[in-house]
Length: 353
Length: 250
Image 1 (spheres, rainbow over the protein chains, first blue to last red):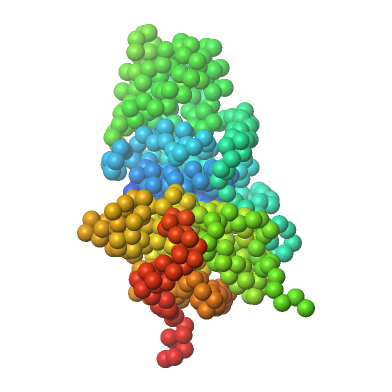
Image 2 (tube, rainbow over the protein chains, first blue to last red; image 1 turned 60 degrees about the vertical axis):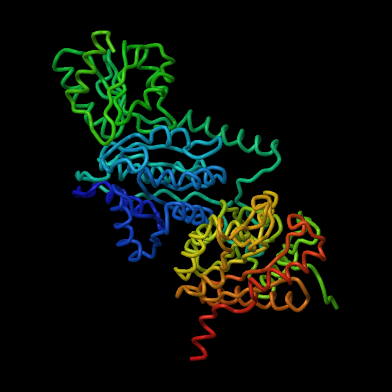
């Protein structure tokens, strides 16, 4: 076992990307993710990789498109307002079936918002963000260890399904320090016969493109992409359950909200309330199976989020509104305290909202 | 002996361009440059948005289609992924000089070792003839129906002159394809731009002053005349920067 070292989430993520074989990173400074770019700037030249500070987030995502089209493990990172700028390119990436990793270390919005942690880009991430019919794989780390571990998972899934993957962290995950064990990955690289590597006069040109002026053709492309999404939905839902064996109240929370909620669940248990938690690790595909199973035993759900209530819609959809779902949220960069979450659990246990 | 044939770097797909449009000539010149340098097998092209969006169907090389204006950024990613590849973009004036100005200027400033073919016909062709960043003062378009009024919408952008001021720029030249002599010069310039990239000599851009008879409301012949009488005086042909020729002369 490798030694544990104390690292900031943003830096653990950056090193994990390098260990996962990423040698092409394109970024642009924005708080609270700038350490990712700074780390890459330091490391990439020493290992023959490419760090490039683009002129804008728009350029950075398009550089990622270029490197991904050429078959490389490409990555960009930003924070909320920057992800809005990247959304055009993310849509093209999805339309071109290109795998890449996009990191969003979220801050409060809308607009310029603030620089404190937030989860208010949940809709943007899970619904696609840009124009058109598409999804991203969306992974939500809840510790510095997961900031590292989910990077390789993200690249692997992106390449397996040929779709962009977003690692949706929040400012807390990026900024906090925790012990982390960085693991070498030995996965064999995925074959990319579609990549632009030059024909070498041996094959027909590869074309990477999202344009289809014939509506029948575009419909067919989208339907085929959604068949792939169905497989992702079936096979790739990830979540972690905490104290769910006999739970009657199910808290649903991801990222830093899950860390707070875990404390609240413990406090509720100490008071004799049978509370548990499901922590989605994949936000898309949403862990519907785990929630549906929980609905069989739980009498109420509490969605804990750092926004005005976004994931709560997916919770309701997953359990088909079969149980009451209440919201416990803070926004604008504020984080709910364990006491606030406990109060929400207690209200749910009493049958109130 | 074969003295004339279609360049190998062009596919057999019929071009969709309007009669009298000079995109076809420019495509051919690009393909001839690729053939003459024998680089088709390691060339990757980046198509843009506009009339030349289907360039990926016409060039017989690996191609990626970029979002409007973003081709130089996509090309940067492709080139950084494997610097041994020859990477070019093919962009119109709306794409390159309006929505993609930042990507163009910064690719040049970085001295990105890519080649840009910039087709300037002073109008948005594909969307049906709107005012472009390069539309001439007084030029009537769908969105300047009373003629481009420089007092309200400002002046055209001269890309070669602008890029020539940047230290990162390697080679920029403006050419035209309205007559045989100019086509020959354009061929030389385009080939030189690709050769510079092969030699690792940084950013090159060839601006080709081109026609749009359909949206200019001209006949093919009339468009060539309008180009000569109006476009070339505003966009003088010539080399605007040639870093390596300058260095060699020192």
